[in-house]
Image (cartoon, rainbow, N blue to C red; front, side):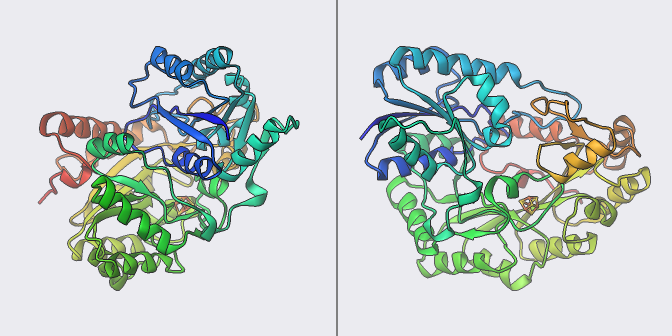
Length: 451
Ligand code: SF4
């Protein structure tokens, strides 16, 4: 048994504060393996470096594990943020903690997994785990206890955990309270991975190219415990997409109904193959709002992103969701592959015609290694092999200029309160809602719909 200090280094609180589920799953695995764990959340502690160091010193861990979830804290293509400074600062903190307690430092998390070599160098951690961490960390700790010499970077993609073996997270009372009080829900995963291949998306690279479903009974029990023991009644299923084409999500919805959990929940949905009966089933199970990963605003640019649906499917999905009287939001990005001024205009009009929903628009697509848009950006000369994606670099179709696209959308969506552009404006609205009215939750569902 070892004493293990786990740090969540997430500093991003927009669109809402999100329970550090990845770290929580690792923590639960370490606890099941018999270790003594302590979770420290840098966001909850108000980014207080002295407090973090004091907590490490007090706990005297034998291992320090840190999770880095987000590369960027912002999605704003008008600014190119260099994240180097942030990660160097985390590195200095980890080095200081290590020197105080002589414990090896192990890092992981989604952002780390996207650029492990760079972040291992910047933070000077001893080891890094790429991909899902719960089994790998338990193995690594045994190897280190046995004075073996593990690789410095451990890749887990070759040995993904089968769905039924994926366990839930460690839900700590005070942490749950912090996140639940601020965001209005607690997040849970019912599956990992994604079988789609959207051009910009890192999910399949991080979690695997097929859906791996957790045991439904375990998911239902987890929700039930969170409700009974910690008073949580609202949930966000943070699966890549909830409505997987094989329909496993129906089993989850049926389980919630059968157990009479009486909860409310939301999730990311794809317009692909959406059926009215399934949405009504989800509504019976407590679904109250649908976030549609629409992503582009016309069929040409949807195809450019390699989406499996076209604009007709989007309209159909919007009708299904809104006719079921559920709040509905679309997130769309202009400026992606195959965008021209003509498709921008078409997209503006398409969004104007969507009824009873909110559309949140943005321009430019963040480029990450390992995505097909990265290859396209290279072939179009937007980046080259030396471009550091630690800085937030965005893809723009060579056919359009950002300023002109921004101007077209601003003009085309004016006086339409449900069409929000740019996303920065959505952020300001959310912050005002939180501050002035103490609103919680998705917040876009509080935006008044235009007549
Ligand atoms: S954007 Fe959504 S549907 Fe597409 S690959 Fe990513 S998670 Fe899957």
